[in-house]
Image (cartoon, rainbow over the protein chains, first blue to last red):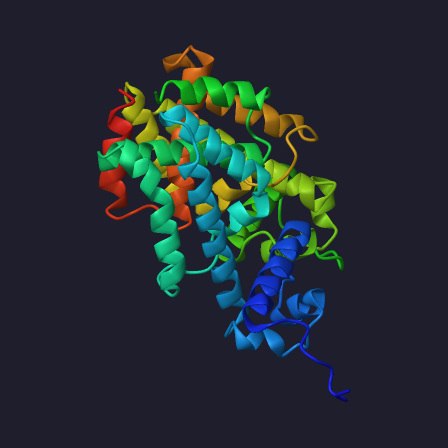
Length: 173
Length: 173
């Protein structure tokens, strides 16, 4: 039996466990107090363990935001045909993951400083671009669902929110 | 000559001075450290003076957000005919007042708890409702400009932002 505490995770598992712990903290209390040390504590590993995967708190948040964009892309790729179905999938993701959505689209980790995050964000735009090849039309649809998602998350979208969102999205075709 | 420091403001002027000081602090450093005491210091009045007008920090922020909606309404009322002109006026306000805009539309003061804020927010919606009597169409246009404003403020709207916003708004008619 070793006298040093064994690392409870294999290499890849540690990274995933840290991201899971960070996401749970983000959802519970927002990004303010989310430090690498607090995430390590929540994951049950030594306070130096996160540095095996993340150079900084910002790098961890960037990885979490990238993971969010990959999940958003999967949700959009699984949406039915047409723009309204895509919009519903987008709003469903935003509503189910409010803190993560805020991290992805707010003043969070810099995409310029984190190429993997930028690539994941670009990839999540692909299902929309495939349906709306015209760039202005695609950006218009994106701004529309982002606006609805933000207004709903901040409590400014009139009730019944879901029915109104449906009516608004229907016109996108 | 009195030995107590005279109040440098008349009644109505004090309220306006406190709101000006609060807005400057909000723009410079965000809402986190904005306390009634700090606002009093910035306005050069005693730390009890703000209570003559505002019961709490939240009440001050609600008054500031209401002032923001009155200014937004004035900007929208001064816009030219058509939806694109209205959208330009809206985005111009959001871009010129990023911190105030965030206070007005983010998770800020509760409109339910501050009827004057709710009334000012409703009034700012009137120029849009006049052009788009159909409620779903009006909300759609609002969500669109709000989405563009947020994406631009958070650095996620592709450059050239202004030209693209124009192209997107033009389709609103």
